[in-house]
Length: 406
Ligand code: PLP
Image (tube, protein in one colour):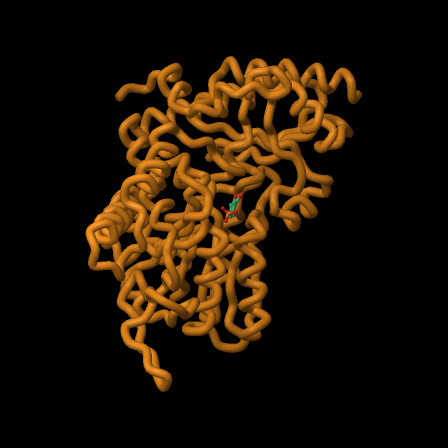
């Protein structure tokens, strides 16, 4: 399949929806992405033709559903460059992946006064679970600063690393600034100090090539719904040797090998971390989304998105009093901005009436927004089904909203 934008847009039924009678211009892709028809169909046909609980059944449907779920795990492993399906733990999304890790990693590896390093640009999902772990285990959270362009200060990050650092948890792409962090370099730095690294890939897997083995990432988290898959499914990747040493997270069915009232032994990887009935429909639908992307070609997708981002930035900069937050040399898919003293909510609400969906507020990164000393931003974020015509319409409507508000 080649990159034919009209065909691609036809694959996404929601893009034909009218909002207040106007065509939808969906620029809130960092919050969640729209779903191609093949993903929607996969959900329906899975329920319609092979719905049965997996792993425990000996009947035909259960085995069919189990095979599909495990094949999906393989598709996901291949997509992110994991060496084995044992390294792919299904979760509800990035947030649950990080909570899982924060809980079991701290239990296994952390002693009082050990340190966890995060950065100033983290999403609440990559701050709060570590604060909670720090409280439980009396750890210290260290925060690496960013510079005025929104790039991580690697020199300062390095200064924070020492023999007490157990883990560095960092976003691959900032959901506010669009900064692409040099995660390979960060992983090398952390490993040199004996620390492990979690990459929060919520904004990255859909927008740049990810190869966890090449990165040498210890852990990598992402959400299905941000990569054209369904809500309610996500992944925690972990190196097999590390996952093996970690204790289980939740207890229940599936994660056990043998249970007596006296003692339970735990299942092998990755099931040890998957208590209860997994989202076996979500997993196959997520795999469908990844196959859909690969059929189009990730290189073509990312090149189109890069073009859209540059074009949108250039058009936005033509607007007087425009302030764009995040000017990193390596920037991806997200533009946060304010214009003059106009409140972001006012802009977002007026834009909505024109059919343009953008996000406004703190984007679940309150410490970063506080650091910037602003009430929030308007955030436009692109996906490969967006077009330069949509960007033109967005900028035109934005100018009209500003005429009303300024
Ligand atoms: N991390 C980042 C960088 C994000 O942008 C998001 C969602 O916006 C999350 C984590 C949380 O993802 P989810 O709500 O799918 O768990």
